[in-house]
Every structure is written in structure tokens, then in C-alpha cells.
Length: 188
Image (cartoon, rainbow, N blue to C red; front, side):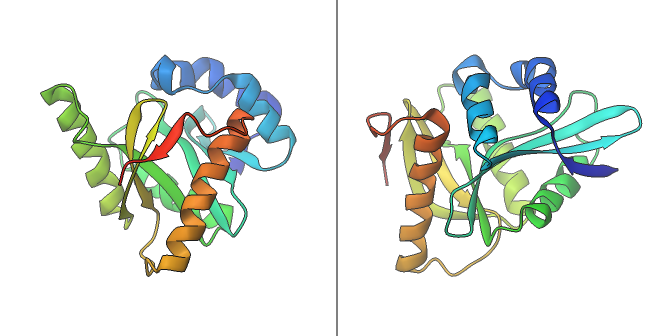
């Protein structure tokens, strides 16, 4: 498996061919927002690929303070459940060079049905198997409750959590090009 940072053209291709299928419309940011962040140099898409094409992708925003934000992560259909996701997730952490990467998982508490509970528990378990840590912090973003996690075990000091939450809110504001914070608030 090979890994690289996607070009502008590759981002557009992945967005149109994969992201639209892999994520619900209400979770998918507009391509224009993603491209503006990319053009400014603080948003990258990492690709896992081989001679047959793209197998996975991860979008990571630079939140400054040596912290990144995992905006999207997916293994393309047909290659899920093969172990590639675990390997690729770790590789993204290495390639990005951040002290840590923030990620979010939809909260179990806000699930509307048993199927959602199962899916959310599976995602959280996946990240925990990879060494990710739940910070115990939950945010509501556009009406969806997310658990805030980080990709490695670090002391969750008051200073670090303050930097982390500042970076998390900054990532959304920068990607969405919004100064107001009416769409995001801390639940716990």
C-alpha cells in the first residue's frame, strides 16, 4: 500500500466518487469549503492507494498549536473490514506530524434507534482499539452530538484540554468560513 497527500484534482475526484457515497449529505461539507481550506494550505487529504486505485482517504485540518482535526476518514467500499483502516489511520498520524489529532464520533446517547447505537459503538470501539482516547467532552455541531476524542494517549491536563477545544472550534470556523459560533456548543 502507498500513501500520499492528494492533489486538488484528486480531492475533487474523491469527493465526487467516494465521499458523496460514504457520508450522509448532512455530514458532508461543501466541496467549495474543502477546496478553500486546501488552497489556504491548512487542509490536506491523505490517500491510501495501490496500482488499482484509491483504497482510503483521510481529511485533516491544521488547527495550529500542533493539533490537527480529522474531518473525514473512510476506506472505500469493497475494502472495509480488511484491516486497511487500522493501518491507514496510524499512517495518517505519522504523515501529519501533529502532536495529536482530534476526531469525533457521534454520541451513543443521542442515537435514535438500536441500529444507530450499534454503528456508533462499533466506530468508537474501532478508534479505541487504535489507541484513541475519549476526552469526556461532548459537542453539539449543527444539531449532532459528538464525543471529542484524540488519536493518542496524552495527559488531559486543563491547559491541554483548553488548547484542544480551542483547536476544535477553530477547525470548524475555518473550514466553514464562519466567525459566529451559533452552530457549535459544548454539551459536557
